[in-house]
Length: 293
Image 1: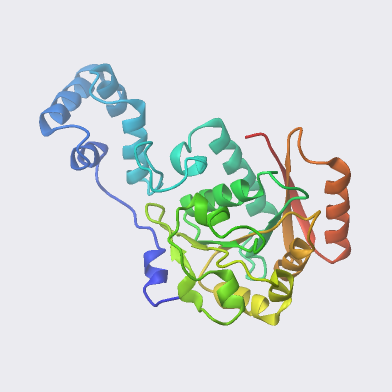
Image 2 (image 1 turned 120 degrees about the vertical axis):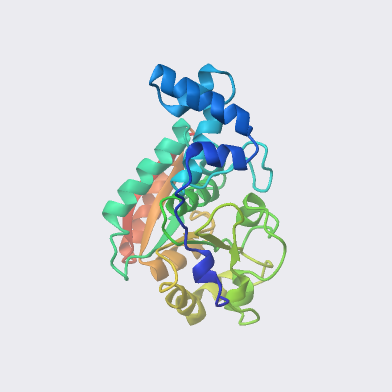
């Protein structure tokens, strides 16, 4: 990774007022701001309440300003730079956003506790379309929103490179994990996500003919060791566990995994079998997420 990346991954606070932020972003004019402040003093109400009463701002505008003031990055609905499936980036105050933050809290308590040996976690599931990549991507976002330097690695080398995390984050084509494991690329393949400070993604890269062999090489473990000093949280997306042994190989490297299942979709026997295989391989199963999105 280049030398400027750690600095770029560091978020910075803002001492500007909500009004200053909204004027600078073009959401209100200076005259609008004076009206709101006058109404606020007159009615002894919060700034946002006064602005909404005057029909000069919406709740979305207030949330936007608060996010800037408290370094809580998220994207507006008009920003199409990422996939709308990244609900943590676009609608962080929704029910799904709250649920994702609840999962984040549990993971902080159970695994990401500051121990340098507990920075990496695999995201696994038994079948296709369980929402594994969706959960991995959105969890990466909520960790970054909390101020954690977060790296999301797409280790599903079975999928088309135009799908998966590259599609969700709309990353430009280029080197990815497969190139790094084949020693044809370096850590400069890791890409920062615009608009979400603190978040970086390593896409899967070109689809190789030997994904399981690549993941089984010492290079994968060396990659993880080389990034643990630069990141606080490293999440690894995986192929489905029922059809391929890749997820078990990846989880053995990370040391821990979180299981994803989908409501009315995931097979309970297949989920139980994958969990048992992981635990027999010495992998800590930190928890599970039931996806209904």
